[in-house]
Length: 389
Ligand SMILES: Cc1cc2nc3c(=O)[nH]c(=O)nc-3n(C[C@H](O)[C@H](O)[C@H](O)COP(=O)(O)OP(=O)(O)OC[C@H]3O[C@@H](n4cnc5c(N)ncnc54)[C@H](O)[C@@H]3O)c2cc1C
Image (cartoon, rainbow, N blue to C red; front, top):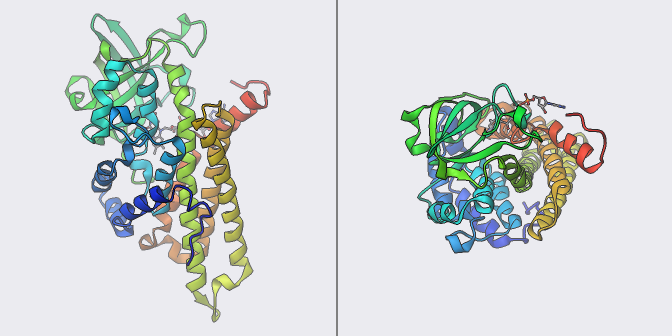
């Protein structure tokens, strides 16, 4: 059957290389990992070796120097292959905080080693159990005491900590009551996870709906060297917001990859499965939802490219990036639902991979940013309606 992505020839070299790498990791590989709740170590190692996860690190630091559009194609193709970028995508988007706001010394210390695959920056600690989406209300506090910051507090849903060397941590450094604007007084730190466990950081895994390594983290007088502060103290929220457009666009590309995977899987199954002496796909009741979901994926993909083009040319791209993420997450979820329905009972069988991808793509409605918060951004910041929080 022919390729269904009309943009396949755009960045074709990247697509072919990533597809070839991913083809070594078939459904059974991912099924086995789920059975054992294991991390796709071998898959991530191969992606790292091939340099894909260092794609957004500039060439002067040993990285691939890709544009965001190109980097998004890498993640799209990972998901398009039936794999899941969630095991390793964070390095792509959180690395920007270090790149844009870290000191030259920090960049020289970490980026070349990340590019060489010697260090992983895969973890990003923002969410808290009692704060949720209300990030400026962050309770975790880092108090400066001489050459260190002493951190106390708790984070939740912090992914890949057990498979990362470094983590970016968002903490308050000035109490909320003492700042003029609630976005002030938050800071970002680089935490060395290799040295963390014995010194006041406790990590507890959270079992969840997908095979995703994620954790609760408790800080009890945990010390971070002051030199690990990224950028200026108190400006962390600005740095985090700054990285969000890239994150939204990359995640949109993953959703598009999922969308194409579901459509491909559904059209093939619909063409082969014979019931009432005819392929089920001959019935328009089966065809039309698949065709409709395909149209949604194509539309979302256009928005993702528009957002990536705006980002790569240095234009403000908040509206486009958020819209791309919203539409792509909805399109992949629609495609997932249609694919499962097309498979009937077999959609629930692990060996078809549909139920796994169904669960994985559902996550994009909630994390890294929930749909409501995107709608709220568009309503308040783009359409200038009254603020609700
Ligand atoms: C598998 C997984 C991995 C994750 N990995 C990470 C990670 O690595 N690092 C990290 O920091 N976080 C991570 N998260 C957390 C994720 O970013 C949050 O779960 C997400 O942002 C939603 O926050 P919350 O769960 O606290 O929901 P809440 O803030 O409690 O909100 C609950 C629901 O209410 C809605 N809601 C809240 N306020 C409003 C409002 N004013 N108007 C309308 N609707 C509203 C939200 O949209 C959401 O649907 C992960 C989550 C999961 C499930």
